[in-house]
Length: 470
Image 1: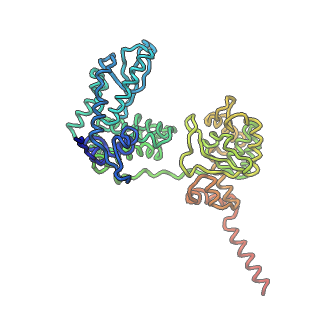
Image 2: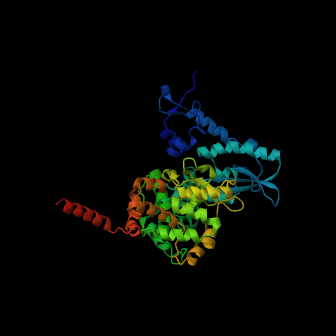
Image 3: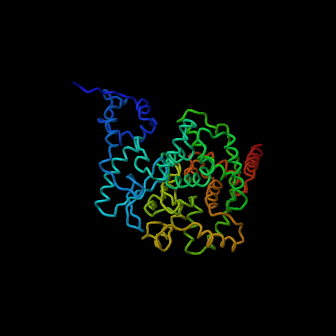
């Protein structure tokens, strides 16, 4: 007699195993739930049907770990990476559960046999955690972390259907990590740990109100910024963005209206664009140290961002086609892809830049990076800014300006020379010319001394021709 088979859609499976449908589609399918075993595509179409009996069997099979118990210092067994404590040479488990880092000590000595025992156990428990059936207290009944998870679950059941903010925020962070660059993950993680979690840690995510959000934003104004005058509107907005995203995601999952709706970001003053004149550029290049002349020549005449020029490698410099391929950036002491698709570009090198980089190749050509220190690593921005850039400006009696103004200078010089705005936008890594005209165009008249004079000259020429024909 053929065994009964129950076919389920993604939403039906999510309801059965108490798991989010999006997680099943984006994380479990084809990693834990395999085609041909756990789900099928009827008639070779796009529709997916899950086989409940097979999934249920695997879930129970993965939960039967009693025969492979590993003795723990607090009473039982575990999952994650296997590591050893230096103070006692005992193995311990380091893993993440519901977005939180968890470490539990075992009584096992560090040996290949014991490590293998833990690894085999972890392979089974991983499926439990992934499918949402992992019971922390079952594995660590005496753990303080287990008691914390139990308390959160109890509060959630008593007070409503949404988890505490910290629990949901850490889950959200773990889910978003795959979409972000490492530097963005670190930035958001810092915002959570430093600002959001301390303020909302004991609040259920579904109980946060608009008043709570506005009160929190107001409190940020009292936090000293880099200048000692409190956080800037831009800094406040960067802190509020993860909160907005978290509440929007929670509202979607738990079917409530986000309290963030209707709250506008603080108005941010326009970026101060203080480009150097062409005469000032020549003055700087004539006065800078010889070992930085090629570096600043490249900055002034390519418009590259600081992270881009510091992450520039010789493999991305094409002298034959006179192009610099910008695909990478040096961010937080590591190479990452550029900030967005628009930033990926090929910069045309003028002859001045070609000459500078060819001369630089004789100095650092055997290194990976174009501009590097004696160890072959990218330059440290803070170091060269404080020790080279600012002293040079003081020596030349020029106003103090950030090195980033070299990028603004390139844009204004290109505009002043009459280059196509579309070409300039591509050079700068802008997807459209909108930002170009909004930010830089007002400097063009000052640079070219054509405050309406070009139109005056056109009228004069036309008037002169008309008189000549009379």
